[in-house]
Amino acid sequence: MKRHFTIFATALLLLSCVEKKSVVQTPPTPRVEVAEASSERVVIPMRFQTLLYSNYDATIQPRVSGYLLTKEYAKGRPVEKGQVLFTLEATPIELQVASNRAALASAQATLIEAQNNYRRAVPLARIEAISQSSLDQYKAAYTSALAQVEVAESTLDESLLQLSYTTITSPISGIIDDNGATVGDWVGVGTSYSVLATVSNTDEIGVHIQIPFARYYTVRGGSKDTTPSYDNSTLLSNIRLYLADGSLYPYRGTYAYTERNAGDQTGTIIIVASFLNPEGILKVGQSAVVVADVGSPEGVIMVPQSAVVQTLNKASVWVVDKDNVATQRSVVLGEKFGTHWIIEKGVASGEMVVTSGSQRLHNGTKVIAEVAKTNK
Image (cartoon, rainbow, N blue to C red; front, side, top):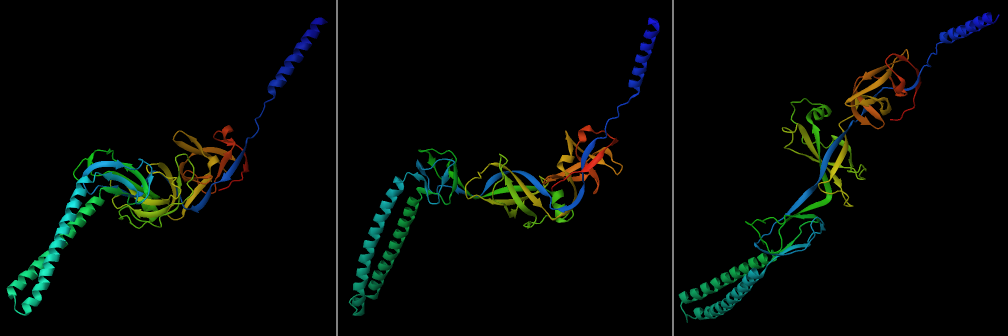
């Protein structure tokens, strides 16, 4: 009896195992959020890495040669228009000024004597007390004395001007940088220090925006053989500047001009934009990023940024077809536009792309698609 019970129990156990093995667990259909790839007409922004520079630099050059007596500024600091920057030793020129003053005084004394002699000679000549030739001589001496005074005055003015050049002031307000001349150096034309400093105006700061020719001719609607226009005032709009720390500069940029020597070597056309700098936030030589809308509105395909999967140098999206089957597809990315990517190749308008839940997918996966709420 005991043997039959054991066999019966064993049979029940085997039957239970068989039943458990026959139950297959089917994984649930994954749920994903999807958004429609939309066709839009937008002005495409471009991003440019650049350096800030001064729109106007004043070169400080001494007009006379001499020993540098003082430097009255701090390198790299602001200076004001008319502020004294340098003084040169003035003693030799001061001595010349004193000599020229004396020469003028002598010429003026000679003039007075010649004038008096001529005035006395005129009535004497009328009564023929002196000859006409004597009168002519007095007149010539007077005329010569007048000329000598004019020469002496001019010489004195020239030396006074030279003396004024020994005090060098800034012609503009801005930030000053010098070339290293120190007090006691011989400076001036023909010396190692023919240029003493440069003052950079910082009321406005300029940037160079380099646009590749291919992009330039696309937005201009011309062929690649067309000579680039030098009036590109309507090409850029919404010009923004981001500082090195990523913060947005509060003032928008404006078109200034187009460089005429651009292109052949760099393959770009260079457009210069200016930014007001009333608080002095922008510094010459500072690195910055400029973002600007380039050209007129264009038709593009856009998908939410969350739909794009990026690995190394490749990008892809998961596309869900009308049968709710997901397939991964490689795409070529354009620029970012708000919360979206511009897709240059790989997705057509109206196709649905996965924005959330793609981690569980593989090619051919059947999904339950729910439309996500997106904002451009």
